[in-house]
Amino acid sequence: QKEVEQNSGPLSVPEGAIASLNCTYSDRGSQSFFWYRQYSGKSPELIMFIYSNGDKEDGRFTAQLNKASQYVSLLIRDSQPSDSATYLCAVGEGGGSNYKLTFGKGTLLTVNP
Amino acid sequence: EAQVTQNPRYLITVTGKKLTVTCSQNMNHEYMSWYRQDPGLGLRQIYYSMNVEVTDKGDVPEGYKVSRKEKRNFPLILESPSPNQTSLYFCASHPGRIRNQPQHFGDGTRLSIL
Image (cartoon, rainbow over all chains, first blue to last red; front, side, top):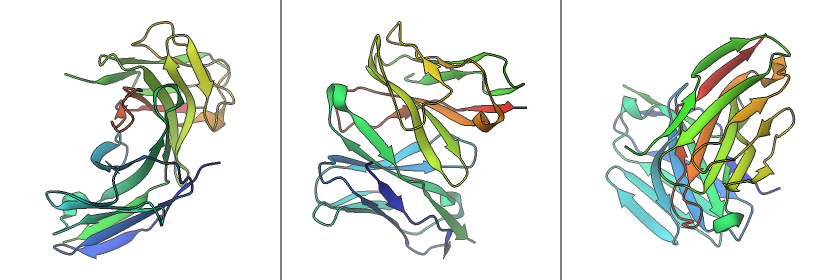
């Protein structure tokens, strides 16, 4: 059973701080990595994706991937109360008929004003 | 507008009464999935379909059926619903061949089985 592990939290940070969310995965063959944000009762929405080792930045968000350590993280700079949500890490593998996406259970982030 | 549409959004029903949750996507995606989401358990895949007439079990398929007669539609069927199927359900689609593309989610269906 392929696994994606996240700290369930809650992770609480003050407004303006950096929030750091972490995710580890068990399958070394994993090829694509996604971070979704989910507000309570709503559907997941894509924040970022990354598939090469290193960092990828998009506005206040930075995704970091280390395939050797099977670790992917999401940094949120200048955290805002509107960032308070559950963040889901998802790991994809295969392609075409073999495509499989596995989700972690999510980390609840609370940004305090 | 690219979207995944689920219906109904909310449903309260009783044990044993067959129900169908519809899902439709307008992106010509090959790959479609159903997930259920429960507190503390995250998103768990119920069934997925890689193309028309090709479906397979996910992690929690018991008590569910699906069909994929057309590329755009992927209904979820509960033949004899039970209270343990009370949950928030999401349908999602993906291009399939393009592995680094994200899944697109519907808005969710909240089912309550009494």
